[in-house]
Structure formats: structure tokens, C-alpha cells
Length: 164
Image 1: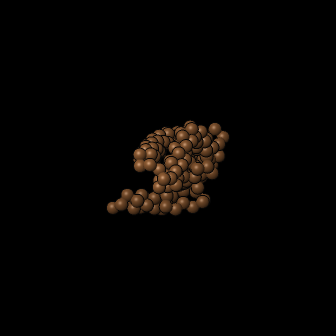
Image 2: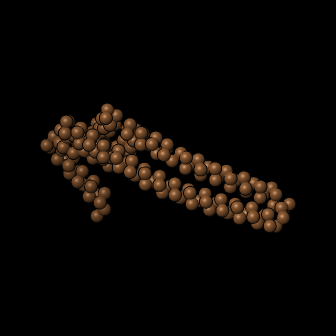
Image 3: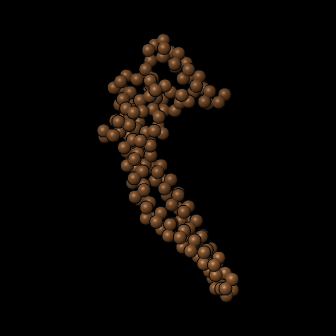
């Protein structure tokens, strides 16, 4: 049996039990929290600042490669064989450097993004727990196929994160 079916069956059973026992359920849209909460926005700005110099370096390499390629296309017929081979070698070197730097930046950015999101997730979890305790929720879920706006507490979580 698929785990999603088990979760759905479990939630269905909880929903039936909730009606009988006045269970209070809440839902948090984690994706929205990561997109809209103040700590998530600050994390994104930190990442942009942190990687702006390296992205600028990458853009310079890309421009250099485009210029070399344009020179080769324009002058390939009139260039002596040795110069043409030298330009092709330069273009290949620039291309390899670009690909290496792009891969390094992507890997480093993914690592840093995961670190930043983990911190946001930790703060969001604390905020969710505080809201759940203060408002006496029995269950708060973060993943659901469907959640009524009646039980959605995402706005409260985003506001709680903004207040910190």
C-alpha cells in the first residue's frame, strides 16, 4: 500500500474522529511560508548578496566566451591556421572554466540555500508549536492534498515569524 494512501486513510480516520470528539486541526502551507515569511525573504537576500560577486565573475566569463566565439566566426576565414587554433583553444578553455565555475556556484548555492531553509524551518516549527499550544490545536499538518481555508493557519505563522 502506498504511503500516501496510508496517510490519507489516517487523516480520514482523524477527520471522522475529529467530528466526534471536537478535535481541532490546522494546516500550514510550508511552501508559502518559505516564499512569504520575513526570515525566508531575508535568507534569500543574504544568498543573493553572498553569491553576487561569483555570479558577476560567471557573467564575465560568459561574455568573454561569446566575444571569442564571435571573433572566430567573423575572422575564421582570414586568420592563419595557428591563430585560429589558438583562438579555438582559448574558447575551449573559457568554456571549460565557465562550466566548472557554474557547477561550483550551483553546488555552493544549493548547500547554502539548504542551510538557510533549515534555519527558517526551525523558526517556523517553533512558531507553529506556539500557535498550536496557544490555540489548543490537536493536530497541525504541513503536507496535504487538500486543506480547507477554514483550517489554514499559514497567515498566522507568517505573521508570527514577522514579529520575531
